[in-house]
Image 1: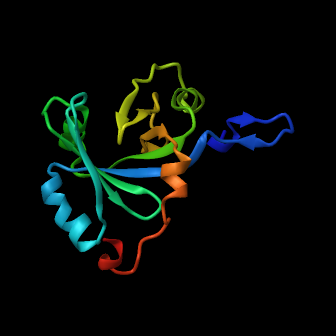
Image 2: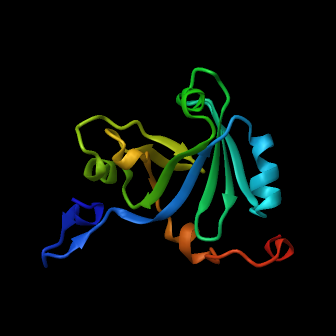
Amino acid sequence: MYPSESASTDSGSTVTALRRLDHVAVAVTSTEAALPYFRDRLGLAVVSSEELQTPRVRLTYLDCGNAFLQLVEPLSPDTEIARFLEEHGEGLHHICFGVDDVPSALASLSDDDAPARLGSGRGRVSAFVPGSLPHGVRLECTEFSPDEDIDHVAGWLSRTREQRA
């Protein structure tokens, strides 16, 4: 069953818990070493950066117009992201979708009854979908905010870096 077929309305049409692509996450060993490429060469502006205590990671968000690129850096060797980097090296870690209700979305997208651990990023509730990785892709859901995600976002990048500043 496709995620868009995960729920039906009274009229028989299908709906999805997913509202928008929020971010694509790239695991990096060093944010500072990654920024010369993603920020300077690609011209993506850093929107925010935060250090989480649990798990001990640095999350850096770069503006891609209608979604973010998130750099995920481990700040402790005993984190899941550090183990991921040891096994796979730097690269794609997960994709994240904005949803109205994170726990409900996790329940509808999970393929088993594994419990989800709620976390946060950019001050929003978020969590990884528990269970297997469909097609090898880890999924995360985060709170969708129409005001922040649509109403006050241009939805595209300007052609020059100066216009984005």
